[in-house]
Length: 378
Image 1: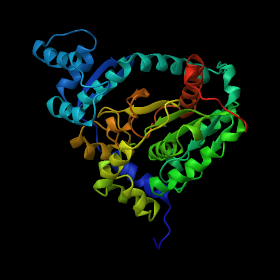
Image 2: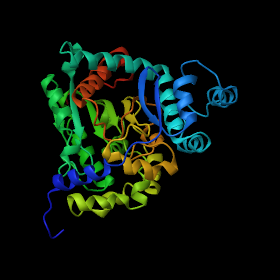
Image 3: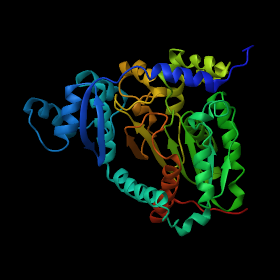
């Protein structure tokens, strides 16, 4: 761009305009997998599912039978994007999102990890957290997301989580990636940063966000087990593992009106065809504990940043305003879903969430040491 812009002024103006649109829908008060719901939804089927079906108050036999069939014969541990789109068309987008949240919350490992995470998070927020003794063995590496230098207002630079862990006494490292670069380019930078820490004799937890989820997955795949023996865990927060239809539609280029020209290669690397082909090749070494951390918004929960993307993506099924929900999941991993939050996770304290996730991961690893590979300082 030839003319300098202040992105914060543009951001404020756009949010003000978007926020004028009122939220419509049906009010609901219920719960999903232990998380309370107080919002609005897009259809009576979603309202009934949240208010009545999940609480055991079955008053619509025909609808009850249709929902029962979903639980009697699940197609996989979690429904994929094809199944979620089908449910969106048969019931509604909010129904499919709530069903996805319930399926995540109902898995035994997910439920058990969430309990550990939630307790650590509460303890940190109440200033009574006693870090697990094993925390002294760990470092944490942060890999920032798209446009982290130009849009720190969204938390893209992960500054708040980094500060929280440093305050908790955990050594933190930050990987300087190309903020608008292609996933493959940044994966090489991330791989080099991971490999550089193998001789330190300490275990490493990696935290990625959004676009950097694919960069970390690709880096770990390329390094393989031998060069990642020091990597104990990876927290994949709102990971763009399979791209976004917004990149296919060139909708992300609208960002240039806020932040100036961006590298077209970075957006191209987020297209769904390229991203899904890349995803098939991911092989994160088995000894690395992976935790997917994601938001699952209903239509009444959206922040101004996510609202337009949510509307655009709804034809593909439930989404967080940037990504399709099923595409956030690294398969076989533990998943923690925050019902009511969208892609930007703006309405919760990211400091306590980060400390809770890291403390929970370390406690989980201490209970399951068999997957560890030997760590050497040579």
